Every structure is written in C-alpha cells, then in structure tokens.
Length: 228
Ligand SMILES: Nc1ncnc2c1ncn2[C@@H]1O[C@H](COP(=O)(O)OP(=O)(O)OP(=O)(O)O)[C@@H](O)[C@H]1O
Image (tube, rainbow, N blue to C red; front, side, top):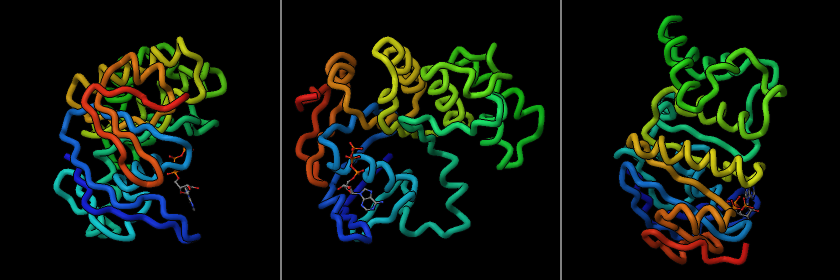
C-alpha cells in the first residue's frame, strides 16, 4: 500500500516538483500517472523508492515511512520495489542472464536459486532463449523485457515503470503492456508514468493526472485526457 500525505518536494535549484500530493494506492492496483512534461510524474515515482526525499509531508510504502528509513535499511526496502525506465538501463557488457542475476547476487542468493530465479523470470517475459545475448544484440522491446525481468527477479510487491514504452514502436508497446498486465494479475502493484494516450485509453486502468506538481484528476478506468 502506498500513501502520500501533504507531500511537497522542491529540488535544490528551487523547482517545486510536487506541490501538495495526497493519494492512496492499494496493493494490486494498476495506476497510470499522466500529465504534461514537467508535471512531476517522475518525481512522484522517485518518492516511492527513496530516490529523492520529500521536502515536507510523508510517504508510506507498505506502512514504512520512507523518511524514517535508516541508510542501511534502504537496500532491503528497495528489494520490494522494481523499477523500469524508458531507456532500459541495462549493463551493456553483461549478458541478459548476468544483468538479471546481478540484482540477486547483491543479496547473496545461492547459485542454484540464482539460476532458477533468473530462468523463471526470463521465461515469464519470453526470453529464455536469449539468456546469453548482450543487450546490443536485442531489439528495444527485448531489452525492455530484460529490464522488466530484472525488476521482477526479487518478486517485488510494487513495479514502477517510468514511460516503459517511450522508446518502442506501437506493436512492441502492446507486448510490453501485456507483460505488465500479467505481472499485475499476479498481485504486483503497477505504477506507470506514460505519455501514451493510446495505451491509457485502450487498456483502461486508474488514471492519476498531474499538472504543476499537483494531482488534478484521479479516476477509476480513466481517460488520458491530454492532447498527446
Ligand atoms: N534533478 C532535478 N533537479 C532540478 N529540477 C528537476 C530535477 N528533476 C526534475 N526537475 C524539475 O522538476 C519538475 C518535475 O519534473 P519531473 O521529471 O518529475 O516531471 P515529469 O512529469 O516526469 O516530466 P516528463 O514527462 O518530461 O518526464 C520539472 O520542472 C523538472 O524540470
């Protein structure tokens, strides 16, 4: 469960990115965050995995107050949150397998568990046969699937996707959406910041619309509502 109360966030350069956010997101929801460029969507998501701290107000993720997390608690806390980005952010010199295993190895899993978990998430995203490839040898859609597999390998309760289809053609974008829906169907909360009017208006979900750091609309099975 995610809860933001009277949340404000000002960057060191004085830009007010979040300007009084109040919202609750239940476990298992699929939520789109929409809004014009600069509205605060990425900053909103950054609050949830302590990539940035609020200036004022509170953020609770699974009843944990992120402001009260001690430094040494942050890595453990982040294991329950997967993040994928528009630009995939895979390690270019590592194979698909290694990119995903890396996320597990840092938490000292056994070799057998690592192999089982990596192959199982690769199977989930339909890329078992490309485990030995390096990112450059994959299409954009395949790279995004690897990034999703990496984000899911620790079985997080929350997956944050910041414009996951931003670099992909429409057909590939639908494939990524199908994977995200499947992940959501297994109980993972999904928060997806997007500029895709077509996706939001086709795959109907809760829509949180932001403008100038504020939530201006929050609708169940909502519309995109902006000119794309
Ligand atoms: N690291 C930073 N330092 C200073 N200002 C920032 C930083 N990151 C974002 N901002 C500013 O904060 C505001 C909100 O940015 P944010 O990236 O959250 O918006 P967004 O809705 O995700 O935009 P986009 O759709 O373009 O990704 C913008 O005015 C942006 O310029």
